[in-house]
Length: 486
Ligand code: AMP
Ligand code: MG
Image (cartoon, rainbow, N blue to C red; front, side, top):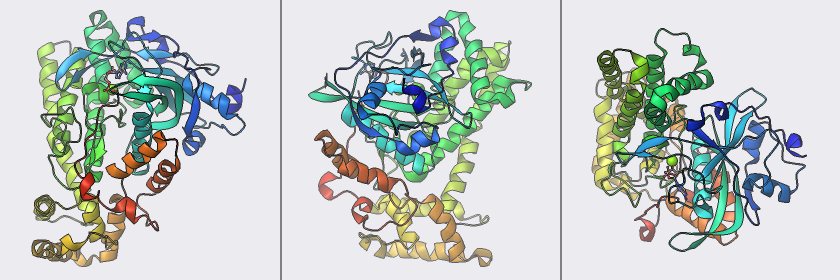
Protein backbone atom coordinates (compact mmCIF):
# COMPACT_ATOMS: atom_id res chain seq x y z
CA UNK A 1 0.00 0.00 0.00
CA UNK A 2 1.12 3.55 -0.67
CA UNK A 3 1.88 4.39 2.94
CA UNK A 4 5.37 2.99 2.40
CA UNK A 5 5.75 5.14 -0.69
CA UNK A 6 4.87 8.12 1.50
CA UNK A 7 7.65 7.23 3.89
CA UNK A 8 5.83 6.75 7.18
CA UNK A 9 8.21 5.28 9.69
CA UNK A 10 6.35 4.54 12.89
CA UNK A 11 7.95 3.49 16.13
CA UNK A 12 5.29 3.75 18.81
CA UNK A 13 6.40 4.01 22.40
CA UNK A 14 3.68 5.91 24.28
CA UNK A 15 1.17 3.20 23.43
CA UNK A 16 3.31 0.79 25.50
CA UNK A 17 2.76 2.80 28.71
CA UNK A 18 0.38 1.46 31.38
CA UNK A 19 -3.24 1.06 30.34
CA UNK A 20 -4.57 3.78 32.62
CA UNK A 21 -2.42 6.38 30.82
CA UNK A 22 -4.19 5.96 27.49
CA UNK A 23 -6.92 4.29 25.47
CA UNK A 24 -6.28 2.35 22.31
CA UNK A 25 -8.82 3.17 19.65
CA UNK A 26 -9.17 4.10 16.00
CA UNK A 27 -10.40 7.38 14.60
CA UNK A 28 -14.12 7.30 13.73
CA UNK A 29 -14.41 7.09 9.94
CA UNK A 30 -15.91 10.11 8.21
CA UNK A 31 -18.25 10.28 5.23
CA UNK A 32 -16.62 12.18 2.41
CA UNK A 33 -13.14 13.35 3.27
CA UNK A 34 -11.65 16.03 1.06
CA UNK A 35 -8.19 17.56 1.24
CA UNK A 36 -8.20 21.30 1.93
CA UNK A 37 -4.52 21.88 2.49
CA UNK A 38 -1.33 19.85 2.78
CA UNK A 39 1.87 21.31 4.16
CA UNK A 40 4.46 20.38 1.54
CA UNK A 41 7.37 22.06 3.35
CA UNK A 42 6.65 20.25 6.57
CA UNK A 43 6.22 16.93 4.80
CA UNK A 44 9.73 17.33 3.37
CA UNK A 45 11.11 18.14 6.82
CA UNK A 46 9.48 14.96 8.08
CA UNK A 47 10.96 12.92 5.20
CA UNK A 48 7.45 12.24 3.86
CA UNK A 49 6.58 12.33 0.20
CA UNK A 50 3.01 12.71 -1.00
CA UNK A 51 3.80 13.42 -4.64
CA UNK A 52 2.75 10.07 -6.08
CA UNK A 53 -0.42 9.78 -4.03
CA UNK A 54 -3.86 10.61 -5.38
CA UNK A 55 -5.81 13.30 -3.52
CA UNK A 56 -8.54 10.83 -2.69
CA UNK A 57 -6.12 8.55 -0.91
CA UNK A 58 -4.53 11.48 0.92
CA UNK A 59 -7.99 12.49 2.06
CA UNK A 60 -8.57 8.99 3.37
CA UNK A 61 -5.26 9.03 5.22
CA UNK A 62 -5.63 12.48 6.78
CA UNK A 63 -9.19 11.85 7.88
CA UNK A 64 -8.19 8.68 9.67
CA UNK A 65 -10.30 6.53 7.34
CA UNK A 66 -7.17 4.69 6.17
CA UNK A 67 -4.52 4.26 8.83
CA UNK A 68 -0.96 3.86 7.53
CA UNK A 69 0.94 0.65 8.18
CA UNK A 70 2.67 0.73 11.53
CA UNK A 71 0.25 3.12 13.17
CA UNK A 72 -1.12 2.29 16.63
CA UNK A 73 -3.72 4.86 17.43
CA UNK A 74 -4.32 6.08 20.96
CA UNK A 75 -5.99 8.81 22.97
CA UNK A 76 -3.95 10.05 25.92
CA UNK A 77 -5.27 10.51 29.43
CA UNK A 78 -4.41 13.72 31.27
CA UNK A 79 -5.76 16.16 33.78
CA UNK A 80 -5.31 19.88 34.13
CA UNK A 81 -6.13 23.14 35.80
CA UNK A 82 -8.58 24.96 33.55
CA UNK A 83 -8.82 28.62 34.56
CA UNK A 84 -7.44 27.54 37.93
CA UNK A 85 -9.79 24.59 38.52
CA UNK A 86 -8.52 21.04 38.50
CA UNK A 87 -10.33 18.65 36.14
CA UNK A 88 -9.81 15.19 34.69
CA UNK A 89 -9.44 15.64 30.94
CA UNK A 90 -7.72 13.62 28.21
CA UNK A 91 -7.80 13.60 24.41
CA UNK A 92 -11.51 14.18 23.90
CA UNK A 93 -11.31 14.82 20.19
CA UNK A 94 -7.78 13.93 19.20
CA UNK A 95 -6.08 10.66 18.38
CA UNK A 96 -2.36 10.09 17.99
CA UNK A 97 -1.89 7.65 15.16
CA UNK A 98 1.74 7.00 15.99
CA UNK A 99 5.25 8.34 16.43
CA UNK A 100 6.95 8.98 13.12
CA UNK A 101 10.75 8.97 12.94
CA UNK A 102 12.19 11.19 10.23
CA UNK A 103 15.47 10.68 8.37
CA UNK A 104 17.37 12.70 11.00
CA UNK A 105 16.07 10.25 13.58
CA UNK A 106 13.76 12.82 15.17
CA UNK A 107 10.55 11.53 16.71
CA UNK A 108 7.19 13.24 16.17
CA UNK A 109 3.66 12.48 17.30
CA UNK A 110 1.25 12.50 14.39
CA UNK A 111 -2.14 13.47 15.75
CA UNK A 112 -5.59 13.96 14.27
CA UNK A 113 -7.67 16.70 15.85
CA UNK A 114 -11.41 16.33 15.33
CA UNK A 115 -11.30 12.57 14.77
CA UNK A 116 -14.31 11.56 16.84
CA UNK A 117 -15.31 10.58 20.34
CA UNK A 118 -12.94 8.94 22.78
CA UNK A 119 -13.37 7.73 26.38
CA UNK A 120 -12.29 11.26 27.42
CA UNK A 121 -14.86 13.16 25.36
CA UNK A 122 -17.13 13.94 28.32
CA UNK A 123 -20.09 15.78 26.73
CA UNK A 124 -18.25 16.71 23.55
CA UNK A 125 -18.83 15.24 20.10
CA UNK A 126 -15.14 14.63 19.42
CA UNK A 127 -15.33 16.68 16.27
CA UNK A 128 -13.91 19.97 15.02
CA UNK A 129 -15.00 22.62 12.56
CA UNK A 130 -13.14 23.84 9.48
CA UNK A 131 -12.61 27.44 10.63
CA UNK A 132 -10.85 26.64 13.92
CA UNK A 133 -8.73 23.89 12.33
CA UNK A 134 -7.55 26.22 9.58
CA UNK A 135 -6.95 28.85 12.23
CA UNK A 136 -4.64 26.47 14.11
CA UNK A 137 -2.92 25.68 10.80
CA UNK A 138 -2.29 29.35 9.99
CA UNK A 139 -1.22 30.50 13.44
CA UNK A 140 1.00 27.51 14.22
CA UNK A 141 2.76 27.87 10.87
CA UNK A 142 3.13 31.62 11.46
CA UNK A 143 4.68 30.90 14.86
CA UNK A 144 7.09 28.43 13.30
CA UNK A 145 8.29 30.94 10.74
CA UNK A 146 8.56 33.59 13.45
CA UNK A 147 11.11 31.21 14.99
CA UNK A 148 9.00 30.23 18.01
CA UNK A 149 8.86 26.61 19.22
CA UNK A 150 5.49 25.19 18.26
CA UNK A 151 3.55 22.15 17.17
CA UNK A 152 3.05 22.18 13.40
CA UNK A 153 0.18 21.48 11.06
CA UNK A 154 0.55 18.93 8.30
CA UNK A 155 -2.91 18.82 6.76
CA UNK A 156 -6.53 19.83 7.02
CA UNK A 157 -9.35 17.78 5.50
CA UNK A 158 -13.04 18.45 5.35
CA UNK A 159 -14.98 15.47 6.65
CA UNK A 160 -18.09 15.88 4.52
CA UNK A 161 -20.05 15.98 7.78
CA UNK A 162 -21.63 18.81 9.67
CA UNK A 163 -20.72 19.64 13.24
CA UNK A 164 -23.33 21.26 15.40
CA UNK A 165 -22.22 24.28 17.37
CA UNK A 166 -24.33 27.42 17.77
CA UNK A 167 -24.93 26.99 14.06
CA UNK A 168 -24.17 23.98 11.82
CA UNK A 169 -20.53 24.13 10.69
CA UNK A 170 -18.36 22.30 8.17
CA UNK A 171 -16.57 19.42 9.90
CA UNK A 172 -12.78 19.12 9.54
CA UNK A 173 -9.74 17.26 10.86
CA UNK A 174 -6.33 18.81 11.41
CA UNK A 175 -3.15 16.74 11.45
CA UNK A 176 -0.94 18.08 14.21
CA UNK A 177 2.75 17.26 14.49
CA UNK A 178 4.47 17.62 17.86
CA UNK A 179 7.70 16.59 19.53
CA UNK A 180 5.29 14.93 21.95
CA UNK A 181 1.97 15.65 23.60
CA UNK A 182 3.24 15.23 27.14
CA UNK A 183 1.81 18.11 29.13
CA UNK A 184 2.02 19.46 32.64
CA UNK A 185 -1.46 17.96 32.89
CA UNK A 186 -0.13 14.52 31.95
CA UNK A 187 2.11 14.65 35.03
CA UNK A 188 -0.76 15.92 37.16
CA UNK A 189 -2.81 12.95 35.99
CA UNK A 190 -0.03 10.41 36.58
CA UNK A 191 0.55 11.79 40.04
CA UNK A 192 -3.00 11.08 41.22
CA UNK A 193 -3.63 7.72 39.55
CA UNK A 194 -2.57 4.16 40.38
CA UNK A 195 -0.93 5.20 43.65
CA UNK A 196 1.60 7.27 41.76
CA UNK A 197 2.97 4.19 39.96
CA UNK A 198 2.28 5.93 36.67
CA UNK A 199 4.24 8.95 37.78
CA UNK A 200 7.64 7.26 37.81
CA UNK A 201 6.84 5.51 34.53
CA UNK A 202 5.87 8.78 32.85
CA UNK A 203 8.86 10.53 34.36
CA UNK A 204 11.33 7.93 33.02
CA UNK A 205 9.56 7.92 29.67
CA UNK A 206 9.75 11.72 29.37
CA UNK A 207 13.44 11.81 30.19
CA UNK A 208 14.20 9.03 27.70
CA UNK A 209 12.21 10.78 25.03
CA UNK A 210 13.13 14.42 25.54
CA UNK A 211 16.05 14.85 27.89
CA UNK A 212 18.19 11.67 27.90
CA UNK A 213 21.25 13.69 28.97
CA UNK A 214 19.85 14.04 32.52
CA UNK A 215 19.05 10.37 32.88
CA UNK A 216 22.06 9.69 35.05
CA UNK A 217 22.12 12.96 36.93
CA UNK A 218 22.08 13.03 40.73
CA UNK A 219 18.49 14.20 40.94
CA UNK A 220 16.85 13.95 37.53
CA UNK A 221 13.52 15.28 38.84
CA UNK A 222 15.14 18.54 39.91
CA UNK A 223 16.94 18.75 36.59
CA UNK A 224 13.76 18.09 34.64
CA UNK A 225 11.98 20.82 36.56
CA UNK A 226 14.83 23.26 35.91
CA UNK A 227 14.92 22.45 32.20
CA UNK A 228 11.17 22.86 31.78
CA UNK A 229 11.32 26.18 33.67
CA UNK A 230 14.02 27.42 31.29
CA UNK A 231 12.12 26.21 28.22
CA UNK A 232 8.83 27.75 29.29
CA UNK A 233 10.43 31.02 30.41
CA UNK A 234 12.08 31.27 27.01
CA UNK A 235 8.84 30.35 25.24
CA UNK A 236 6.70 32.94 26.98
CA UNK A 237 9.41 35.56 26.29
CA UNK A 238 9.07 34.70 22.62
CA UNK A 239 5.30 35.13 22.79
CA UNK A 240 5.79 38.53 24.42
CA UNK A 241 8.26 39.48 21.69
CA UNK A 242 5.71 39.15 18.90
CA UNK A 243 2.59 40.06 20.89
CA UNK A 244 1.14 36.56 20.87
CA UNK A 245 -1.67 35.90 23.33
CA UNK A 246 -2.28 32.18 23.81
CA UNK A 247 -5.67 32.71 25.39
CA UNK A 248 -6.07 29.44 27.24
CA UNK A 249 -2.93 28.70 29.21
CA UNK A 250 -4.43 25.86 31.21
CA UNK A 251 -1.93 23.32 32.54
CA UNK A 252 -3.11 20.77 29.99
CA UNK A 253 -2.05 23.19 27.29
CA UNK A 254 1.56 23.47 28.45
CA UNK A 255 4.06 21.00 27.00
CA UNK A 256 7.10 19.47 28.65
CA UNK A 257 8.95 19.80 25.32
CA UNK A 258 8.58 23.59 25.39
CA UNK A 259 6.49 23.81 22.23
CA UNK A 260 3.49 26.13 21.97
CA UNK A 261 0.42 23.92 21.81
CA UNK A 262 -3.33 24.15 21.35
CA UNK A 263 -4.25 27.08 19.22
CA UNK A 264 -7.77 27.87 20.31
CA UNK A 265 -8.73 31.43 21.13
CA UNK A 266 -5.19 32.75 20.56
CA UNK A 267 -4.53 35.96 18.66
CA UNK A 268 -1.86 38.59 18.12
CA UNK A 269 -2.05 41.92 19.90
CA UNK A 270 -2.29 44.90 17.58
CA UNK A 271 -2.55 48.06 19.69
CA UNK A 272 -0.19 47.79 22.63
CA UNK A 273 -2.18 47.21 25.76
CA UNK A 274 -0.81 44.87 28.44
CA UNK A 275 -4.35 43.95 29.45
CA UNK A 276 -5.34 42.69 26.03
CA UNK A 277 -7.59 39.63 26.10
CA UNK A 278 -9.27 38.27 22.97
CA UNK A 279 -10.92 35.15 24.32
CA UNK A 280 -14.66 35.45 24.89
CA UNK A 281 -14.52 33.16 27.93
CA UNK A 282 -11.60 34.82 29.73
CA UNK A 283 -13.76 37.23 31.71
CA UNK A 284 -11.20 37.93 34.44
CA UNK A 285 -8.32 38.47 32.03
CA UNK A 286 -6.46 35.56 33.63
CA UNK A 287 -4.62 34.93 30.36
CA UNK A 288 -4.18 38.57 29.29
CA UNK A 289 -0.98 39.51 27.44
CA UNK A 290 0.86 40.75 30.49
CA UNK A 291 -0.30 37.94 32.77
CA UNK A 292 1.29 35.28 30.59
CA UNK A 293 4.67 35.12 32.39
CA UNK A 294 2.96 34.95 35.80
CA UNK A 295 0.65 32.19 34.60
CA UNK A 296 3.62 30.31 33.18
CA UNK A 297 5.10 30.35 36.68
CA UNK A 298 1.79 29.25 38.19
CA UNK A 299 1.59 26.31 35.76
CA UNK A 300 5.21 25.39 36.44
CA UNK A 301 4.39 25.30 40.15
CA UNK A 302 1.70 22.71 39.35
CA UNK A 303 4.34 20.76 37.42
CA UNK A 304 6.69 20.97 40.40
CA UNK A 305 3.92 19.73 42.70
CA UNK A 306 3.41 16.67 40.57
CA UNK A 307 7.14 15.89 40.75
CA UNK A 308 7.28 16.09 44.58
CA UNK A 309 7.20 12.30 45.14
CA UNK A 310 10.23 11.89 42.87
CA UNK A 311 12.24 14.90 44.03
CA UNK A 312 12.75 13.59 47.57
CA UNK A 313 11.36 10.79 49.73
CA UNK A 314 11.03 13.35 52.48
CA UNK A 315 7.98 15.35 51.39
CA UNK A 316 8.82 18.50 53.33
CA UNK A 317 12.31 18.51 51.92
CA UNK A 318 10.95 17.98 48.39
CA UNK A 319 8.49 20.86 48.77
CA UNK A 320 11.15 23.18 50.09
CA UNK A 321 13.54 22.30 47.22
CA UNK A 322 10.82 22.66 44.56
CA UNK A 323 9.61 25.97 46.00
CA UNK A 324 13.09 27.46 45.87
CA UNK A 325 13.47 26.40 42.24
CA UNK A 326 10.07 27.75 41.21
CA UNK A 327 10.80 31.03 42.93
CA UNK A 328 13.73 31.56 40.57
CA UNK A 329 11.28 31.90 37.71
CA UNK A 330 10.81 35.65 38.01
CA UNK A 331 14.54 36.27 37.78
CA UNK A 332 15.00 33.87 34.86
CA UNK A 333 12.12 35.41 32.97
CA UNK A 334 13.27 38.96 33.68
CA UNK A 335 16.68 38.19 32.22
CA UNK A 336 15.18 36.69 29.05
CA UNK A 337 12.69 39.53 28.73
CA UNK A 338 15.31 42.26 29.08
CA UNK A 339 17.58 40.59 26.56
CA UNK A 340 14.65 40.20 24.16
CA UNK A 341 13.49 43.81 24.51
CA UNK A 342 17.04 45.08 24.12
CA UNK A 343 17.26 43.13 20.88
CA UNK A 344 13.98 44.61 19.69
CA UNK A 345 15.50 48.05 20.20
CA UNK A 346 18.94 47.09 18.90
CA UNK A 347 20.64 47.91 22.20
CA UNK A 348 24.19 46.62 22.37
CA UNK A 349 26.09 46.13 25.59
CA UNK A 350 24.85 47.07 29.05
CA UNK A 351 23.53 50.38 30.20
CA UNK A 352 21.83 50.93 33.52
CA UNK A 353 19.06 53.00 31.96
CA UNK A 354 18.02 50.40 29.39
CA UNK A 355 15.06 49.13 31.31
CA UNK A 356 13.69 52.64 31.75
CA UNK A 357 14.16 53.33 28.06
CA UNK A 358 12.21 50.18 27.23
CA UNK A 359 9.36 50.76 29.66
CA UNK A 360 9.08 54.41 28.58
CA UNK A 361 8.46 53.27 25.03
CA UNK A 362 5.92 50.65 26.12
CA UNK A 363 4.15 53.24 28.25
CA UNK A 364 4.06 55.66 25.33
CA UNK A 365 2.61 52.94 23.08
CA UNK A 366 -0.03 52.18 25.67
CA UNK A 367 -1.04 55.79 26.24
CA UNK A 368 -1.13 56.59 22.54
CA UNK A 369 -2.72 53.32 21.39
CA UNK A 370 0.20 52.60 19.07
CA UNK A 371 0.43 49.37 17.12
CA UNK A 372 2.97 47.06 18.83
CA UNK A 373 4.42 45.44 15.69
CA UNK A 374 4.45 48.57 13.57
CA UNK A 375 6.12 50.74 16.21
CA UNK A 376 9.23 48.58 15.99
CA UNK A 377 8.94 48.60 12.19
CA UNK A 378 8.88 52.39 12.29
CA UNK A 379 12.04 52.43 14.42
CA UNK A 380 13.67 50.19 11.81
CA UNK A 381 12.79 52.83 9.19
CA UNK A 382 10.33 50.50 7.51
CA UNK A 383 7.54 52.16 5.58
CA UNK A 384 4.46 52.32 7.77
CA UNK A 385 1.32 53.64 6.14
CA UNK A 386 -0.25 54.81 9.40
CA UNK A 387 2.66 56.84 10.76
CA UNK A 388 1.11 60.11 11.92
CA UNK A 389 1.22 58.90 15.49
CA UNK A 390 5.02 58.99 15.47
CA UNK A 391 5.07 62.79 15.00
CA UNK A 392 4.06 63.02 18.65
CA UNK A 393 6.45 65.14 20.79
CA UNK A 394 6.84 62.60 23.58
CA UNK A 395 7.71 59.95 21.02
CA UNK A 396 10.22 62.23 19.29
CA UNK A 397 11.89 62.94 22.66
CA UNK A 398 12.05 59.24 23.42
CA UNK A 399 13.49 58.54 19.98
CA UNK A 400 16.27 61.09 20.58
CA UNK A 401 17.23 59.31 23.80
CA UNK A 402 17.11 55.97 22.03
CA UNK A 403 19.32 57.17 19.15
CA UNK A 404 21.82 58.55 21.65
CA UNK A 405 21.86 55.21 23.44
CA UNK A 406 22.37 53.39 20.11
CA UNK A 407 25.57 55.35 19.55
CA UNK A 408 26.95 54.02 22.86
CA UNK A 409 30.58 52.88 22.49
CA UNK A 410 30.62 53.95 18.83
CA UNK A 411 28.06 51.40 17.79
CA UNK A 412 26.59 52.13 14.36
CA UNK A 413 22.88 52.31 13.55
CA UNK A 414 23.45 49.58 10.95
CA UNK A 415 24.70 47.22 13.64
CA UNK A 416 21.59 47.80 15.70
CA UNK A 417 19.38 47.44 12.68
CA UNK A 418 20.87 44.03 11.99
CA UNK A 419 19.80 42.81 15.40
CA UNK A 420 16.41 44.46 15.24
CA UNK A 421 15.55 42.96 11.88
CA UNK A 422 16.04 39.46 13.26
CA UNK A 423 13.55 39.88 16.09
CA UNK A 424 10.96 42.40 14.91
CA UNK A 425 8.54 40.84 12.43
CA UNK A 426 7.39 43.09 9.60
CA UNK A 427 4.21 41.09 9.33
CA UNK A 428 2.17 39.02 11.78
CA UNK A 429 -1.12 37.14 11.29
CA UNK A 430 -3.34 40.13 11.86
CA UNK A 431 -6.70 39.13 13.23
CA UNK A 432 -8.79 40.72 10.49
CA UNK A 433 -6.63 39.13 7.78
CA UNK A 434 -6.90 35.70 9.40
CA UNK A 435 -10.67 36.04 9.66
CA UNK A 436 -10.95 37.23 6.07
CA UNK A 437 -8.96 34.19 4.85
CA UNK A 438 -11.00 31.78 6.97
CA UNK A 439 -14.31 33.28 5.82
CA UNK A 440 -13.28 32.79 2.20
CA UNK A 441 -12.06 29.24 2.90
CA UNK A 442 -15.42 28.43 4.45
CA UNK A 443 -16.92 29.46 1.11
CA UNK A 444 -14.48 27.19 -0.76
CA UNK A 445 -12.14 29.96 -1.85
CA UNK A 446 -8.62 29.13 -0.67
CA UNK A 447 -6.79 31.95 -2.45
CA UNK A 448 -6.67 34.33 0.50
CA UNK A 449 -5.61 31.53 2.85
CA UNK A 450 -2.76 30.44 0.59
CA UNK A 451 -1.68 34.03 0.06
CA UNK A 452 -1.68 34.68 3.81
CA UNK A 453 0.36 31.53 4.46
CA UNK A 454 2.88 32.56 1.81
CA UNK A 455 3.35 36.02 3.34
CA UNK A 456 3.73 34.61 6.84
CA UNK A 457 6.59 32.38 5.72
CA UNK A 458 9.11 35.22 5.65
CA UNK A 459 7.98 37.59 8.39
CA UNK A 460 11.37 39.27 8.80
CA UNK A 461 11.93 40.01 5.12
CA UNK A 462 10.66 43.03 3.22
CA UNK A 463 7.99 41.82 0.84
CA UNK A 464 6.45 43.88 -1.93
CA UNK A 465 2.76 44.81 -2.04
CA UNK A 466 1.80 43.48 1.36
CA UNK A 467 0.81 46.80 2.98
CA UNK A 468 -2.69 45.44 3.49
CA UNK A 469 -1.27 42.66 5.63
CA UNK A 470 0.82 45.07 7.68
CA UNK A 471 -1.77 47.71 8.38
CA UNK A 472 -3.61 47.52 11.69
CA UNK A 473 -7.26 46.50 11.49
CA UNK A 474 -9.62 49.16 10.13
CA UNK A 475 -11.62 50.87 12.89
CA UNK A 476 -14.73 48.81 12.23
CA UNK A 477 -12.81 45.59 12.97
CA UNK A 478 -10.85 46.79 15.97
CA UNK A 479 -12.87 45.10 18.69
CA UNK A 480 -11.83 41.53 18.06
CA UNK A 481 -13.02 38.51 19.98
CA UNK A 482 -12.01 34.85 19.71
CA UNK A 483 -13.89 31.75 20.69
CA UNK A 484 -12.65 28.37 21.89
CA UNK A 485 -12.33 26.10 18.89
CA UNK A 486 -14.73 23.45 20.13
P1 AMP B 1 -8.90 22.51 24.83
O1 AMP B 1 -9.72 23.70 25.22
O2 AMP B 1 -8.85 22.31 23.32
O3 AMP B 1 -7.57 22.49 25.46
O4 AMP B 1 -9.71 21.25 25.34
C1 AMP B 1 -9.94 21.00 26.69
C2 AMP B 1 -10.51 19.61 26.86
O5 AMP B 1 -11.77 19.48 26.21
C3 AMP B 1 -9.63 18.50 26.29
O6 AMP B 1 -9.75 17.38 27.11
C4 AMP B 1 -10.25 18.27 24.95
O7 AMP B 1 -9.97 16.99 24.44
C5 AMP B 1 -11.72 18.43 25.26
N1 AMP B 1 -12.51 18.80 24.08
C6 AMP B 1 -12.46 19.97 23.40
N2 AMP B 1 -13.34 19.96 22.39
C7 AMP B 1 -13.96 18.77 22.40
C8 AMP B 1 -14.99 18.15 21.59
N3 AMP B 1 -15.56 18.76 20.56
N4 AMP B 1 -15.35 16.89 21.93
C9 AMP B 1 -14.80 16.26 22.97
N5 AMP B 1 -13.86 16.77 23.76
C10 AMP B 1 -13.44 18.02 23.49
MG1 MG C 1 -6.00 21.39 25.20
